[in-house]
Each structure stands twice: as C-alpha cells, then as structure tokens.
Image (cartoon, rainbow, N blue to C red):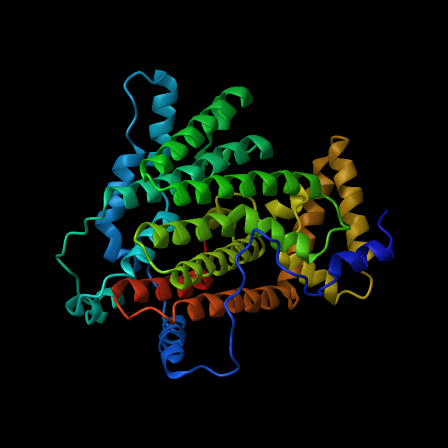
Length: 403
C-alpha cells in the first residue's frame, strides 16, 4: 500500500536543477528581439498547418540515402544469420529523425543565398534538383547515431519481452533472449565503429558519454517500475536518458564536426535536448490517446509495465485522493504477477480513459510546446536557410504526429 506522503512525493512539481549531464537551457529574455521573432513566427505559422516529415527532410534526402547505405554495409565474414537479421532490422526503416537532425544541423552552416531564399522547398510546393552530398565524416556520425538508437530498441525488446514493434515481429520473437542481446551488442559495436570513423576525439567522447547516459537511464527505468515514490524529476531524468540525450548528441556532434564556434555548438546541443524532451513527452501522450493500430502496440503499455509518464503524473495531481488509483494499480499488478493479467488490463484501460477525459493530456501537451519554444529559441542565432526552416517545421511536426 502506498501512503499519502509517497503520493505527494510522486505529484511534487517543484523545479529542481537539471542533472549535470544535461545541457543547460539557453537564457531567455522576457520579450523577443527582432532576430528571435523570425523563427518563433515561422514556427507558430507551421503549427497551424499539418507538417509532412518527408517534405521537411527533403533538404537532406541525399544525405539520408548515404546514411542508409552505410548502415546496411555488412562485412562478408559476419555470421550469416546475424547479418540477415541485421539487414532486416535496418530495412524496417523509420523516419530517421536522429540522423536527419544531425545533417540539418550541419546544414545551418550553409550560407548560399540561392538556397536561403528557396522557401517553397520546405513548404512542399516546389522541389530542388540539387544533389545533396555530405562529407563522409558527417555521414558516419549520422549512421552512428541511428545505429545506436536501433541497438537500444533491440535490447528494449528483450527487457520488455516484446514480440512486436510497429506491427512487425521483433528479433526477440524468433531468437532466444541471449542471442537477441548479442545481436544488439553487434549493433552497438557497429555504431561505435561509425563514430570512430569521424576521426574526431570530441565527437567520439560525445558518443561514448551518450551511451553511458542511455544505459544508466535504462537501469533507472527498470528500477523505477511500479515505484510510486518517484517524482517528476525522475521522469525528466528518464526521458532525457532514453531519448533526448541521443538527439542532443546528434546535433552537438554535427556542430563540432563542421567547426562551429562554441556558442553555436552549445545552442545546437540545447536544441537537440529540447527537441528530444518534447518528442518523448508526445510519445507518452500518444500512449494514452493513440490506438493499437497507430502505435503498433497496446494503448497504455507504459502504465501496464509500471512506467510512470507525464500524462499520468498530471492526472494524479487532479485527484483529491490519488492514493486510491495507486493502490488499485498495485493490487492489479499483484494479481498479474500471480497469473491473472485480466484485472491489470481492465484497470489500465479504465485509467487510460480517465486520463484522456481529464486535463492531463492538454497539460502534458503544453509542456511539450514549452520545450519546443526553447528549441526554437536555440535556433535564433542561425541565418535563415532551408535546413533552418526544416528544423522549425520538425518542431511543429513533433506535436502534430499521431504515431
């Protein structure tokens, strides 16, 4: 049973200092100056119309094709079943937002006037015939980021016992847990190899630090499952480690590779952090408001696994006696552990409906917008070009997406 003191700890909203690993938020003034108003105005306009990820990624489509090709490269002497599984996993694709952010961040250095003035390209009303070619070090970085992300998904599926991801069978569904872990290890090794190909010690350090943060975060998430004593700061730390750290590494390392000055590197590091935090908050919202079909997994999966997310934390704040909900969840979990999962499924479904009917979803949505507002602010120092507009459009896409 959880007592009232523990529930108050859970719903505490007091701001605490960011963890040392996390980039500090760039300072904000009360009013926007003329330069800051440009990206904020563009972002607000893009929020009003649906954003298409494929169109927004058009400026780096050629670079992403190179990243895809590099990720699919397999040494001839690799164990054949591992090579086949590796290629199948990579072939499942995805939006490739992490490598895209690295390439777009590097593109902020582009100052060619004819590219800066081509606004219709991002809006989708015209297209460019320019072939995107990126330095191989940048392609290696982008491939390292995405390969690291893919490796973490393979290990996540083992930890969660997941047999499906996005309606496709996981490697864990056909391989033993041990073999699946080793396949994930191979992907970690490939991502490290790609990072080393950049030949930049600072980039390699960023990569290794990020891997450390991700693993630490996964351990904390396992430890925090069904722990209703945790507060919102534990949630922030978890989603930073799980998601935002890799986005931040992608944009920071790209800035380092192209030789931007320290203040611009810090701005892009912060942008990746803010973007990643918002992305994960929206993911957590979708776990309540989405459908099994759009999510590729059952709605309420996080709650069913005992992972507490922002919408649920906001929901508890609204309740006069939140300990009653906590007690029901714990009792349902005990029944599931005893072999009766039906009670847990019914309890989770009921709570999901209650969260959706409350003000928790909108509160979490506003918090995601707050992170994105900081992300847009981080882009203010950069000159206007296609890559900048794509980054702003992706900020709008993050809160518009349904999967």
